Amino acid sequence: TYTIAQSCVDVLDKACIEECPVDCIYEGERMLYIHPDECVDCGACEPVCPVEAIYYEDDVPEQWKEYTKINADFFEDLGSPGGASKSGKIGKDHPTVAALPPQAA
Ligand code: F3S
Ligand code: F3S
Image (cartoon, rainbow, N blue to C red):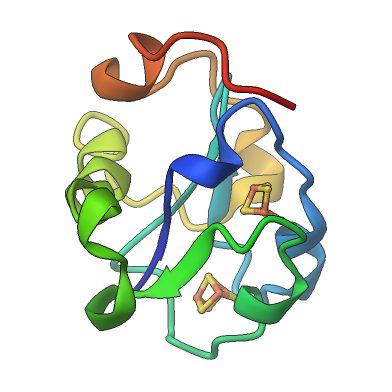
């Protein structure tokens, strides 16, 4: 799967959403999250993010390694909604993300 890392927090550019053929990039309050079971590894989202927040899971930089689990855990209570556009904005974040201080724009 692909992972969205901390650089997305408080940026939420959303260019990635437009590229995903399977609509598996879901919007939280402060960042977006890729559904690990719905992502088909097409990689289309990665180059369009202006802050380079998206990585293939094996390529996530060391300081953001926990974000692969953070993306997965975000869906723990949501299951596999099967489409981000119909889910709309999800009014929560992973607790680790929710606890971050405001990130510089
Ligand atoms: Fe975030 Fe980049 Fe998408 S900032 S919303 S991962 S384009
Ligand atoms: Fe979508 Fe990116 Fe995966 S475009 S299929 S989330 S690699």
